[in-house]
Image 1 (tube, rainbow, N blue to C red):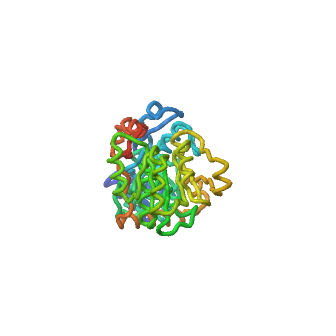
Image 2 (cartoon, rainbow, N blue to C red; image 1 turned 45 degrees about the vertical axis):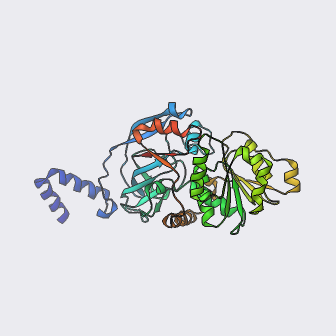
Length: 373
């Protein structure tokens, strides 16, 4: 009766207020269940309805934002990068393909706007990143389930937060999961100017490991070499330099690498294998050259080399969300201590997505494209 009387008075004083109160009572929510209106609104998103050339199949469209209920979390996206895996997914050449039509983007950072009544780990104002691939981060806003998100600290740079969930995680896991490396040991990698490559350099330096970093030759090779050395690279070589006999002089000053990280394949991966220490491991996490990894029989028999693969999505399937959160917090500590920075980035407004897609697919572009909302 008391509520009924208040409702009647509210109708008399303000019909709009009464309507809101009726909705509140009907849904049985508490005031703490959300912090903003859950009325549907329009959001902008980059969507593809079929697989193909990203420049042709991606379109900027409006979507309805669903109401926040139960375990839902309303997120306003802040920034989302364009990664090679995003491009491959749109092309249909990836190990995980979402149901079409789909929103592009597997990585990014957003801020919680509102939460449903069942949400316990997140609150409005928190920063969040995707817990799994395929979430669709190239949009201004979205309503996700709580379990699809991981909360992260807000005291790290925005670009670091936006690029935290894929490349640094891949770099860290490959450095610690395959070989029991000790300070002073060395690691060799190709595609060293990629997002993963730059993270490998910095994390290895923090672990006091030496890195031999292979890159493709280019007109501004000295500029790239200087930039990678500023990140902590010990040696930077071109693919051609790695093949010449004089390269062996490097190993007078450091031990043969027990770990090789391959993102290219083809001849480049064969060269990495040639420089591995007996019993060493090469981990493949990409195939930029679109050529198979070739290992000679003699290397496998007489050097007992091991060939492994790594895919972060599979690692997440095999580990709990708490373990992924622990990994994220470890990386955040490195960021706070200045030991891990975001890759060189170019921020591009969402509406200029064609520019970002084009730049992401050009050769020798070391700057990661980040869509800003």
